[in-house]
Length: 253
Ligand code: PEP
Image (cartoon, rainbow, N blue to C red; front, top):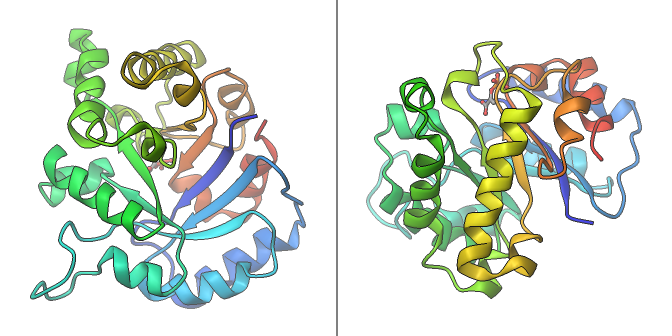
C-alpha cells in the first residue's frame, strides 16, 4: 500500500512551550504507526530539534521544515538551506505552500530548485499545489495544477520523483472552513495521478502519495481519506488541537 500521511502544518503558531505540550499530548494518545502510516509535523525552524527529539523513539513519526531556501548556500540572511536541515537529520520539508507562493513570490521555477536541493539532501519534499478560487470557478483547475507539477517536478527522472509527496491544497479551502467535497478531492487527485502516469508510467504514479489539504478536520478526515487517491492530509488549523490531530492520524487508511 502507498504511504498514508497525516502532516501537521503549524505555520507561525505556538510558543516553544505550547509546541512541546502539543506534541506530548498527541504522543500521549499512543497511536502506533507501522508499515505504511506516517505522522509528520512541520514546525517552525527553531522547534525542529525539540520536535525531532520528542519523536525519536516513535516509529513513523517525523519532524518537517515548513520551507527551505532555493539556493544551496551563501549570503541569504535569515534563510535556511536544505543542507542545514539534512545536517540536523530532518527528513521532510514542505515546499511551495500557497502562503509562500503568495507572500514570498515563490515561482514554479524556484520550487523546482527547492525540490532538487531537498532530494540531493535526502529530504522528502511535500510539494504543495492547488488553485485559487477564480480558477476553480472558471473550471480550469486541472490545467492549473498540472502546470504546477510539470514546471516544478517533471524535470526529475522517474527513480527520483518516486521520493516526493504531493499535497493538493485548493487555496479557497485553506483556513476558510470550506472543504473540497470528497468527489472534488478524488476527482482532482485521480487527475493528478493520471498526469504523472502519462509522464512516468502507472507504476511510478501509483507509488506517489497525494495528500489533500484545506480545512481537514477531525470530523471530515475519515471521509476524505477514504477516497482511493487521497493518501492522507496536510493540516493547518486542526493540527494545533491535540484531540483533533489525534483523530486525523487515526483516520489514515
Ligand atoms: C494548510 O495550511 O496547509 C492548511 C491546509 O490549512 P487548514 O487546514 O487550516 O485549512
